[in-house]
Length: 175
Image (spheres, rainbow, N blue to C red):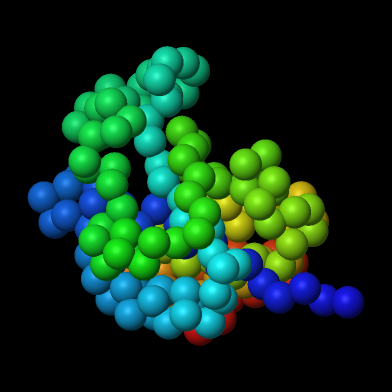
C-alpha cells in the first residue's frame, strides 16, 4: 500500500523573500502560487520548516556567521518568520531547525520513515538540496517540485536541480 505523499515547504521565510536580505532568492515570489496549490492538494499532510541560527556557534558555523553576520540573530527575530502568504495558510505542522537540511528526527516523527516527500521552498541550492539528499539517503522517496522552489539565483537553482536528478530514482525533479 502506497501512502499519499507529504508536502514539505522548506523555509518560506522573510530572510529569503526580502530583497534587502543578503539571502534573497530573486524568484521567491514566483514560488508562492505553486506552493499554495500544492498545499491545497495535500490537505493535512503538509509540514513547513523554518531555519534559525544555532544557539551556540561551533565548528564550521563560526566562519559561516563571520561571513554572514546579518543572520546571526535571536531565533525569534521577525526575519525568520514565515512570509505572510504562507503564514496565513496555518499549516498543520511546523518544525524549526538550526540546520540547512531539514530531514531529521522531528520531520521523521511527523512523516515517518521511508515517506514519500514532495519538496518546495528555498533555497534550491541550499536547504532544499540538503533536505532532499538526506531524506533520500534515509530511504524516503523524494520529489522536488521545481516551480515551487527558488534558488539564490537562476543558475544556482538549475545546478541544484541537476545535482538532485543524479539521484534518480530516489529523487525526481518535477519540472
